[in-house]
Amino acid sequence: MKRILFLISIVHISSAFSQEITKGEVYTYARKVVDTMTSQSMHGRGYINYGTKIAANYIKAEYTKAGLKTFGKEYYQSFSFPINTFPSEMSVSIGAPLVCGKDYIVRGDCGSIKGEFPLERIVVKDLAGNKKELKKFSKRDLSNIVIIIDKQGADLKDEKVKQLAQALQGNAFKAKGIIELEETKLTGDFSMEASAYPALIVLRSSIPADAKTISLDIVNERISSYPSQNVIGYVEGSQYPDSFIVFSAHYDHLGQMGKAVYFPGANDNASGCAMLLNLVKYYSMPEHKPKCSVAFMAFGGEEVGLLGSKYYTEHPLFPLKNIKFLLNMDIMGTGEDGITVVNGTLFKNEFGKLQEINTANSYIQDVKIRGKAANSDHYFFSENGVKAFFIYTMGGIKAYHDIYDRSETLPLNEFEDLFKLITKFGDYLQSVN
Image (tube, rainbow, N blue to C red; front, side, top):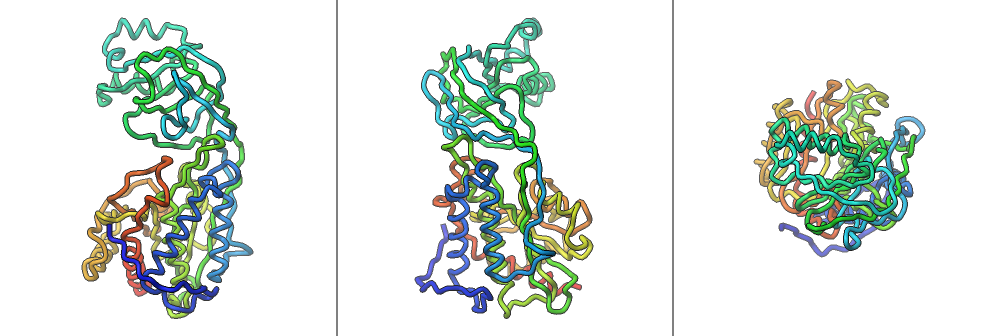
């Protein structure tokens, strides 16, 4: 882990941020942002207790300190969408109580259920390979049985096996509920829809092999129109105010699951917000006044399906054709193995320049190229003709969409060097006609 900290006195930063960012200050501010955005007070930046709004207000306050200009009257661009949530205390017991987040999580589309029910394990590879047993199974009444879907040893490349696994997970057999087994990691998700049945993901080690019953108390609440917002501001260019470089990052995460459990989302994506806000400070300094305008976009709704960035491209605050380049930042917290650049194969000149800058300055270990992917907020921009990269760091911790993605275990070990690489790349983008 490369983490070089200098003992420097911390001074108050004025709204103009007129002084240069000194060695160590980028890391220090990033750590403060990540600590704040992963705190319990933000409820995992999700949809219970308006965690997303709390996070958006924090980013808005940082924009205000920096003196960013607004498009229109305010920094917020409002939109809404439906979302399934789990606001109440929940309990699951199989022989003994299970711990939410550690032993199990509920699937994003999970419905409500309360009571004790028979539990039956369905071994996918055995059932898929036995037509007689599969036919018999399809005729059974499972309406009061919770089934455990065991895919261990199943060849999911086999079309028949794949179809059976999908049918079980989709509850085509109308069981009371389903449990999907995972071997090592619980990865949370969202859904805008709610199922009529409960669906859980449970670690295999948390279910006794001889378990016969399960006790459940889960309440879902589908919100038909949850209010969200993108947080957008800019620094006006000194020579080309109508031409924009855009930096973006999403601020939302998985929020809470019940009253007690929340997903901090340190790497995904408090780290990206920390980079965004560091860039806000940098470009707000008079000595870093850009020739082209620089816009900063913090998107909501990314975890639900890139909804905030999609909404923006459908309702742009300035013409998309005026964007020279967009750099989206998601998962900025490690970097031992370098970074990956999504869309690098689409925009090879810009990718080559990014590699050249890194090689000349020995900032990070590697800058790897990747093709097109709909995996973060760059996607709808490049689909609408905007040159865009999505960069993410590689190596280090593997926590992702779980309760272990915490600030205290996020190293930020290559954060300052990555910041330097991005600002140097920003200088290059400013110089390109």
